[in-house]
Image 1: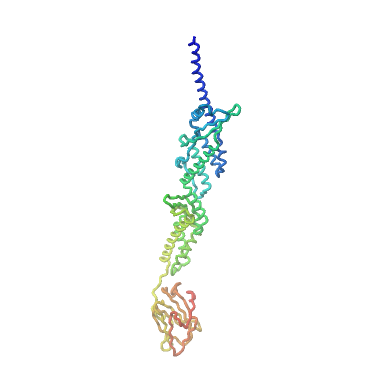
Image 2: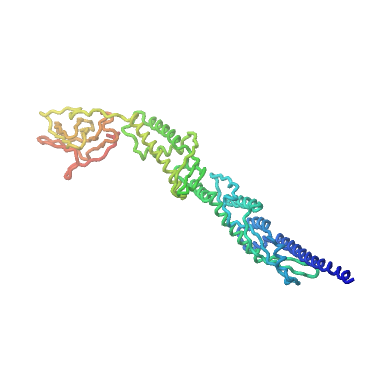
Length: 469
């Protein structure tokens, strides 16, 4: 009988023990589910709003992706271990649970890169590009956070359970979540800086400055008004490579040079004694560049710059155009010399060219030209009538004695290095002068005329044009 009475008791004890154990497990599971729901429903956007970030919309987008990627690690087991002994049971109780957060601090920009926004370098705007770059980054990071290979780090967060009447609610530590959100945004911004640098954002900034500088440049209007940046790249070793869309200045200047030459030839049908100097020719070509009807040909040029300074890069553009301008000036000058220059002729010997010189009846006038004072062509005019009485040619370093009748005379002379004949004399480079004083030739006198400036000269001169001579 005793065995029969005690047998049920032996059977009930194990049954009671199992029931209690099962109840414990169910509570841990239920609390873990509540904790997971509380974490999933956290208002991350509200947490981050307190940071007053400049780019709030962008931050909220990333925070939403961040919140979706957070999860509890082994919540059920941690709750079960912390409930041992029932110490957590009551109206308010807490659990310290392990939360896994996405860890972007260990990422490099190349892990999330999906391609940078296209750049219209000729009309680049760093503000709009920066916004496009941020959008591309956020989308790329958002896709990465949604993946299953996101690096994470573990932090302990306190979850508080509160029983109010018959309902039980769970709340994670908001300060801990805010701290995690702040850290994530900080790490994401740091990653964006690397992402932006890899996209050569500084080149975008430099290109914008260069385009603005080109718009206000005035040294070569037709060149700069048709120039824009096609691409600007920073070199790792320093400096920049600037690719430009611009006018083919070599083609333009060659066409202008031909136009200037033909125009110059039409204006000087009989040729010229010397081409204009380089400054004048350069001015003619620059004016032709701006007024020519020659169709513009566009080309691409690449310049290497030591810095991203916009004015410096404008100087580089101006320098290459100036170099081409210099080449065309030299070619144009050579062309004029070879095709339009009037050649000098052999100068006459020292002699009387026109007029009578009688040593028996005339008064001697010795005319002397020192060495290194050029040759001279002399006209002796009758002071009363203005008629030319005598013309004389005296080579450099020579002298001649002529005999003039008693009377009053006016003398003018031309001097120069090259003789172009009696029509052109010494050309436009010669000097043409007249004595201001009348020369009186008197009986029984001898006269000497030295044709160079001396300190005690008793004669003064005035300059004449070649035409008035």
